[in-house]
Length: 104
Image 1 (cartoon, rainbow, N blue to C red):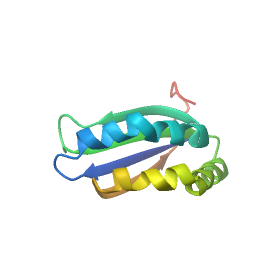
Image 2 (image 1 turned 45 degrees about the horizontal axis):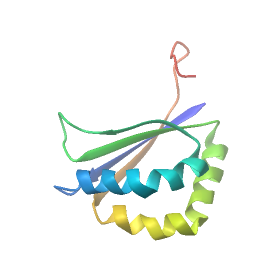
Image 3 (image 1 turned 30 degrees about the vertical axis):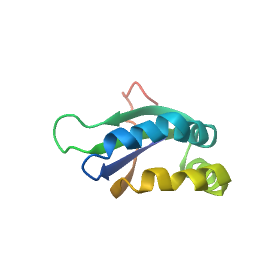
Image 4 (image 1 turned 135 degrees about the vertical axis):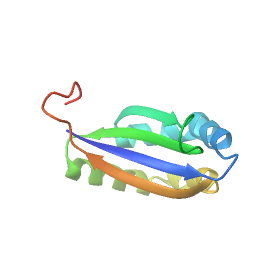
């Protein structure tokens, strides 16, 4: 199992409209393609205006195939401008669980 941690730094004031768009439409498009959502968060202390979401995949091939399907979905392509307007930077990190991690 691998985990992708995606961190988006949003423009000031962008967190509320970003989360509203994802809640109303985006997550329903993403989740069937991407599969296991571990969590969706926003920062409260520390660097502000950040969104962090974590997805689990069997391996890098699974991630690549799932993300490719999402990027071919016309609903996702139509939705993306709703959130892209709020994003300044994006970071994607792949992490592996330690042998003693409760998430394997």
